[in-house]
Amino acid sequence: MSTPSFFDALASFVARETSDLFFPLPCRVERYDAEKQLADVLPLIRFPVALESGETEFQSLPVVPSCPVVFPGFGPWALTFPVSVGDRALVLFSGAALDEWIATGGLSTPKLQRKASLCDGIVIPGLRSPVEALPSASSDALILGHSEGSKIAIQDNAVRLGTVDASSLVALASKVEAELNALRTVLNNHLHSGVTPGSAASGPLLTPAGAIGSTAATGVYATDS
Image (tube, rainbow, N blue to C red; front, top):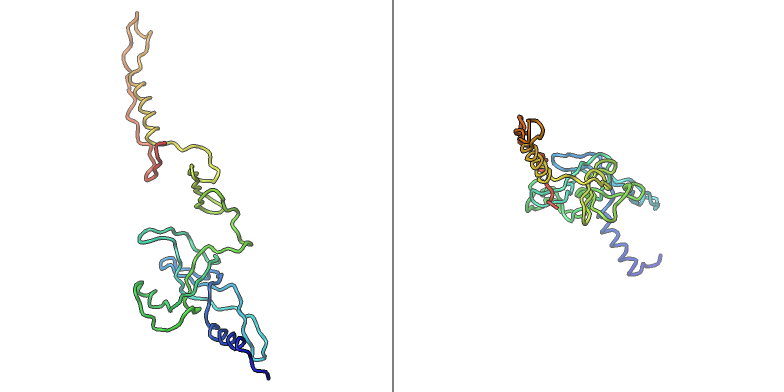
């Protein structure tokens, strides 16, 4: 038997040392705890396993339990969305055991000295293969919403509500109230001619228009332009 070269020996050593290390993988959500934002995920890539016969067999990996789900945000601010069984995600595997950090949320000392382990996944939602791509991805707007439902489209000079091609301008409460109050003033001061003999004018309306109620939407604002 020939003696392996230095490079063959080095490659074999690296392969042995990294055989238990896991790198980012596409996964499918199998269970989700919305209260704790933890998901059980199934890796969607089979891994090669060396058999005693010397052959290699590709085997499925087990479900990775209780992985924290990443939602964009800082402090009390966050962008959240529903997570459902069957959703796809990119799962990163931590450089240290996460058990103690998950339990405390602060500076922690791992009890187990493992790294890039299949036990320590972190879920980043939204990974899609081209087969499961969204119906469309805008090239000129930020889109928030459901792929088959309501959307908000934010462009450099417009915000469109409901659909990405909404074209009816939304009325501003301050301008609507100003126009209605102007109309009220006209009605309250309106005089009818020809009701009394001669050139005398009749009195004002017997039942003046009442105050205009607010037309503002609660908590929804827009600039007066």
